[in-house]
Image (cartoon, rainbow, N blue to C red; front, side, top):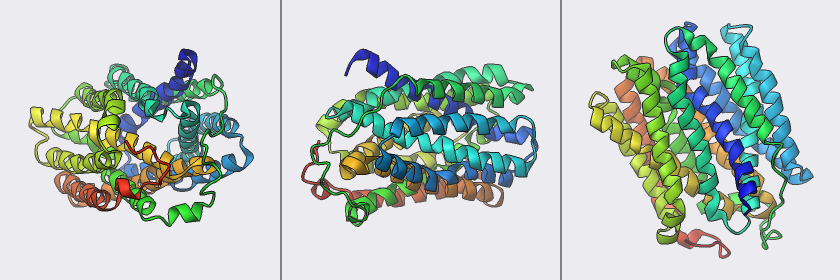
Amino acid sequence: MRKTQYTQLSAFYFFYFAGLGAFLPYWSLYLKSLHFTANEIGELLAIVMASKVISPYLFSWISDHIEKRLVIIQGSMFISVIVFAGVIPYQSFWWFALVMAFFGVFWNAALPLYEALTLNHLAHDTNRYSDIRLWGSVGFIVVALVLPMIIGGSNISLLPLIILALLVASTVTTFLVGDRASHHSYQSKQTHIIETLKKPIVMALLLACFFQSLSHGAYYTFFSIYLEGHGYSRDFSGAMWALGVFAEVVLFLLMRRLLTKFSVCHLFAIALFITALRWVMLALWVDNLILLIISQLFHAASFGLFHACAIYLIHTLFPGRLQGRGQALYAGMSFGLGGTLGHLLSGYAWDSMGAVWTFLSSAIIALIGAIIAFKYITEERLPAYADKT
């Protein structure tokens, strides 16, 4: 891959996840500043995630049939900018719910398509995916560190404008890359999505991804609020988000080496087990600075290792024209259905069960995913054409 091509592909990840870095850690704080309740905050974030259940698959199905993937990416990002601007003039709950619903449909449709586009550009060098994807983590870190300096105190009202600017930047980057069709020599095989979905390893993978994202609901919805409730500053909260994603970057840098030495299936299962451990530590020892930092470093596994392995497995199990739909199913089952229920249920649990039991419940959910992965996602179940690292 040429250096220019690498830079062009990386630019989208940088700005897309910079936008996510402004949205995930701080949108709940912004909503709290507007006096929304914990239930309403959980519901509004769940609405954004709910669109991932259907929209990525719908847009990917269209893309796989008309073979205009890049045009769909560009269109969905452009519309997401227009729709998100709607949060600025009105601030009622139902207006926010409507805007979040339409925004989520288009914003969440772009990433799975771009993942498939990136892997097609990489052709047979898919192990280099993590080298490109890490720039998304860098963008997240930059925003997580810089944003508290801008929105500290009463300046949280600037957050929608900052997110909007980052959405515009990520949209612009989609016009810097070219479209690319699949390079798989086995493209003619396994053209029926239903046949692929019936395979035990595929069902187990999607189910494990669902439980993994479900377990993250409380973290993504209430982590900043949780830290502030224990006396930590907003700057410290931003630093903790950045630390977690920095650990993720280190993991992405090491991913190619890990895939040459260890089984991707084993790495995937280990990521889920470490996630369960992370939520236990966050539930019981949030006031212990050292253990809190260690739990954030575990983000390298709970997202970085998990996501890199999942992308590789999905790319392997959904070949040829099924690539876009495979990535969409991964996004829909994990960040979509799992993320939606995670945000929604954590919002209800936070008030009724308390923070500790909410995070301990998250640990149990992640452990279920780990057990499924250890039992059913094995090298022997991968297709014969897979490059079994």
